[in-house]
Every structure is written in C-alpha cells, then in structure tokens.
Length: 374
Image (cartoon, rainbow, N blue to C red; front, side, top):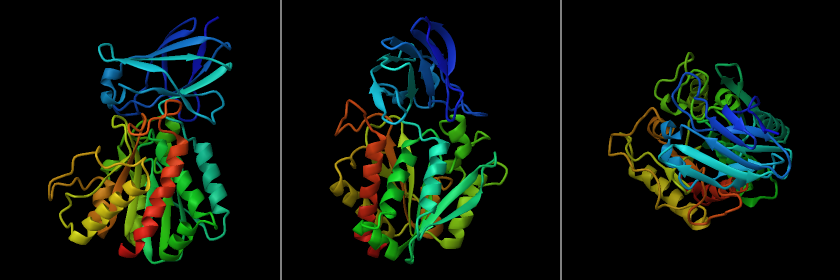
C-alpha cells in the first residue's frame, strides 16, 4: 500500500509529484508572488515499519542551495519532540533524500521544528494574563492577522525584541518563547533586574501571513520585510510600518531581531558597522554584548558569521541598520542555524527548540550584566 502525503495545514508546504509504495518525489512550493523557496512542512500517512524514502527535488534553484549539504531534515511523530532524519543532498541533481523508518502511522517532516500560529496565539494569551504584562495589537498584516506586541517592565531603557520577519525561520519564535518564559518568571534574578531597568516591547511574530502560508521569507505580497525598514508602506509592508511607528513613539535603546541562517552551522550575531552616524560608544556596547554572550554560553561563537559593511555602506532597509541609525540603538541580528551547531553537535536533534529556549535566557542574562552601560 502506498503512503499518503499532505501539507494542507498551518505552515504546510510541499508539492507531490509521484508516490511509489514508500518512496515519493516531491518539490517545495515558492512563496506567493516570489521566487523564494526553502521551507517545507508535510505529513506522511504510512504503516508502522515503513522504510520511507522522500526525495525533494529542484533544490539547486532554492533560495540558499548551500543550506542543503550536511543538513538533516526535522522529523516528529508527536509534533512535540523533533528529531532529525538522516538526509543526503546530491548537488548534481539538486535532490535531498530523506530516509526514515516509521514507528507511527503518521510522521511529520519539516525544514525546522514548526511554530504554529495556534501556538503563537497560546503564547500571547498565556503571557498576556500574567500580572504586569500588557498585550497590544500594533497593527495588522495584509491578510488581517494581528501584529502582537507584549510589553512589560517599569524602567527607562527601551528594549525591542522581534522575530520571524522571515516566517520560515521558526527557531526565532522558539527563542521568543524562552525570552517570555524567563521575563515572566518571578524567581529569576536577571528578569527582576531587567524589568526594573527596562521597558520591553516584544513582537514574537512579525509575519503571520507568511507563517501560516508556509513561506520561507516573504509576506502575503511576496515582500521581504527585512528590506522595508527605510520606507515601509501600508500597501506592501504594513507589518513593518506598524512596528516602526510604535518604535518611533517609544524610542529604542537596545534591540534584537531574531532569525535563522540556512547555511552557516553556528549561532552568531550581525551588527550595524556600516551606518553613517555610528559612534564609538554604540559600537563598543555592541562588541561588549557579543563578547559577553560568547563567554556565557558555548552555543554562541564569534568566528563564523556575515562580513561587515564598510563605513557608510550599511543597507538601511534592514531593521538592525535602520534602528541603529534612526535611534542610536545598540541593535543586532541574531542568527541561529537550521543545521546543527558545528562546535557542539547533537546528532539526535541538531539545533532544536530546546536549545533556542536556553539561548534566549543567556541573551537576557548578558543584557542584564551590561544594561547600565546602554
């Protein structure tokens, strides 16, 4: 009996070309009105003991072909614990072959552990009910979904944390869950200190339309939101427009934009070195944060990362550069891997939701150590 494959659900994405017994030939659907594709998420109905071989083709044309070598697909049978299925990428054919022996009648596969919109709403509802937390709707996406912002803290330092401008980078919202768990834990000393000194503005998902549609990088209009920060518009990028308008009202002292990187097997941050108005103290605080975080957790490193822009050459349509230039903020882009952490590999899970959660705590603890300098 042949397996059945389906992706008609929140963040689902796959095209089925052929099924032959327990083998299938598949491809990834492009983001709407865009050429980007890399995110996949689908379920396989099968018999227990089936030896599945799933071939995802056409990946030489995907958004980031270097993301496929040394990558193992995420797999789950309960949608709670996500492990890794042995996968092999053939560069000549552009095909990723995933092999897995099913121990359940339904198996889910994804590019990274998905963070569903239902889980997002649960996160918002649970956190909004905690004393001291204010939930605001900053605006709406092109399809009418709320852009949620959770605010807390009584201090003067304005801290903005935001994630999933690129919806397929689901590790960013797993990181956000860790941020919110720590900040709302009354026993955590770092959280208590930060809430005294800061006002937090937290946007766990900036691209709900792309998230629900199973996009990698764009919103409903095929727009890459992290290239809209210099001139966001209600017609193309209302998600950025409403967040930036709120930032204009509050100001920004410190900001992290959480992302995932397809190719680089490490956690790293990227800064704002090329902005026109950069000053020594701003840059010193950024370097201090980066170096302190590397000292706090071996899951973070400073050797692998993006090249820095030359002086005055920063792309101000990207949020980190725009915030650093616009507000004089210490801003940064946090990147987590789709693969594994090269320095601390975990063959069972690779980089995982659990490690995102732990990293979030170290990011906040690092901020607490140097908040008086920002």
